[in-house]
Image (tube, rainbow, N blue to C red; front, side):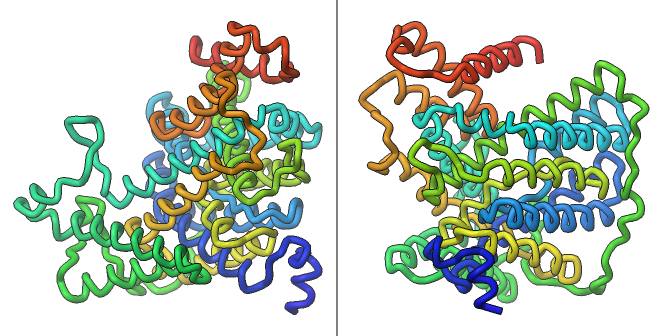
Length: 463
């Protein structure tokens, strides 16, 4: 079996082995398993059956991730995307008043269009047209973005008078919330330090061990009464519960429940284009960032076999809509598996298997708290930001026409809480700075970049 896996996924060619790939897959899964709990909660606000959405989420992630492995042999994992699910539930259904069946139809149409664009290589052309400087900026921006997500999820960073600030430990101790949110934040900080030490000592699987150790400390704290779960504060029990058994929730309430009655209306087209825009550039940004960190880009900054990766993403979106979930997309948390050494589709297959098993062992996977996965996100964020120091990135940061747009793309992602917004700002600034400074005369800037800049500007004016 080991020999088959080595030959099929070409492990030696990618300087990896079965053990490393499996550990990387487990790491990726544990950092994105939260989607199994979060997605049903968000989509149920749109009136969808939470149990069916849970099953659709697990199956959609499993199918999409398997396709990624088979089509591209890359260590990327897919699942219903955060942000896209909120737009689905709170904007399309909540504000615009459409049924969730119509929203699923919009997701399905978006997926079909993406399949066509992937087969005609339009999406890969967009990827390849992005200048190397922006690719480095996007990689760094994603690193800052997932670091911020990790700190926010662990409640180390909270909202405050200065917009965001450090968790108020003293005030929380006084009002009693420290034993819930405060303990979680402290455990996350401990986990970050422990994970950093393990990476410094080159401990195999250090990022995964950081998650497991932090989770273990959380269970110990809960058993001893130091950590007190409080759902009102978003702090839940970290102990797996099998009180409801291991029955798989029925998919029937959402399966094939698409409503195309509004397909020829202007609002439907607007919804579909909005979903498509965010998905397109979130996916491109994720592929750029994760592939760059894994040194998968060629000397021209292109990703070989990107067509297969994009096609897997497109088919997963279409399949997810049929199952009954919002847009399935490539997850930025894939970077945790890459940082753990994952380099091939075997990492993705491992993630897919775990998503399938989650149908039977949901209590275990859903018990992983956000403060336990925070150390992985923070450390991987650091590893991705370090791409700025990579001497092989072929970007001259003394050239302000390259460096400033890269910087804008990087900082826009965490501050605007969006990968796609970071790409938008980066592309717009790149075109304007190069045009107005006259630097464009000495460069071969792709016409695609000019077109994208115009589209992004129009988006901010009209959308």
